[in-house]
Image 1 (spheres, rainbow, N blue to C red):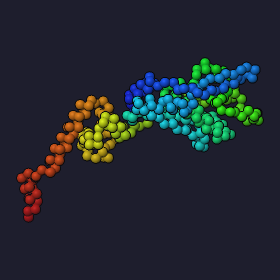
Image 2 (image 1 turned 30 degrees about the vertical axis):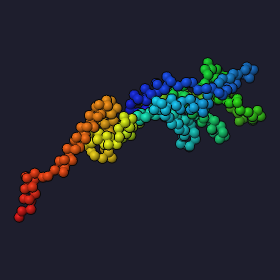
Image 3 (image 1 turned 90 degrees about the vertical axis):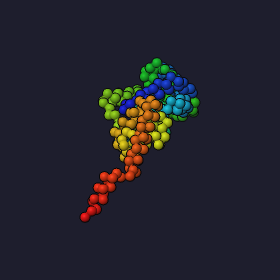
Image 4 (image 1 turned 60 degrees about the horizontal axis):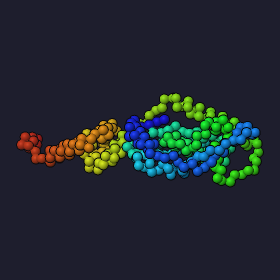
Length: 287
């Protein structure tokens, strides 16, 4: 898992989101066959990806949260998983480890699409901490089988050749091994991506309601630079840290001081030269 240097805002927003969001409506049914053909499998209800997105859209917006999901591919371009990135309007973010996909080398486009949707659904619910499935009490691990089969759709009951159908046990072992690999990766130290301090400054300044003139005044007050394009990333960090923790009164005072300093600088730049400066200039031209 990777995250921004600070997660104070996104952690608070996520906590409020989780306290407010309701469980998605479970409109689909999954069939889990038993490993033993003599025993009956079981069914459970779950919410599909569309149901989940409809449920979380407004609570996310209310608390300044959004998300991005992207596929993970290997060097050959094969699809290996899906990760979710949770963002906050402050500029803070969390990147969650990918949910692996095991579609198989001979998978059809439809099977790949189903696996991708499955991974997106689980990655999103894991990131947001919401439940989209009924608690099957570990039955799926016991029975193995096809997760997420939509019984609301007609299925093709024509039997396929046996050599194209991996057993439920093999499918279960493959999924278990994938998660073991993911757990081992999580134990390795993760690098924290450097935060774009310029973007963080603008995000916090916008959140605090500061217009462009006020932003320029703060930049000048802290750095003495009139152009924001000349400000370094470290200087933006200092200003952003101030805006992140300062009260409205402290920010107003800093802006007023910066405006005063800028005004005094202009007055000095446009004031008439002193007598000594005039004499010095004239003296340079005397033969």
